[in-house]
Length: 190
Ligand code: BEZ
Image (cartoon, rainbow, N blue to C red; front, side, top):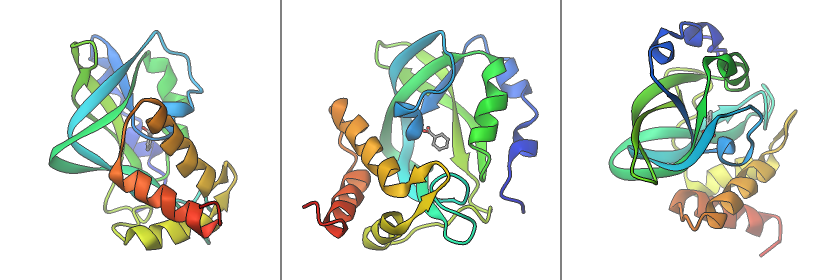
């Protein structure tokens, strides 16, 4: 199976049929918003959690030495914090290209912080894609992130920017925080 999921995402009838398209960002989409939007809200996705189980062969690593970035894993009792952006269908050429390394769009109920409930659209790594690296200890993940770098910059920056963005919203994600601390230790920052 190829890493590149643009063909799999090219049928947009699922999102075209929605009254409002709310893109849910749980990773770099929290702090790197390089697309226009008409509304934005803090949001929560129930039943999912962040994990650094997706390989980055194109942004924060290389095909020879992939970095590790986020995907979402189903976790019935968990709630994932993120940012939701109301966008138009026009934005998905850019988004599907940006997230083409093994991610497919998925739809699920989304709770906006102001009480509204909408259908959320989010990107999840296919677990049967070569881009899915899977579970590893937080130490092993930290070591891989510490040494990885790609065309979009260092894997460390991706991690630290995410941790800083979560902290700025008063959010604690144990998985992200533990790996952030380990990487800072490896860098001698702690
Ligand atoms: C996000 O930031 O929400 C995101 C994470 C992985 C792939 C695409 C988007």
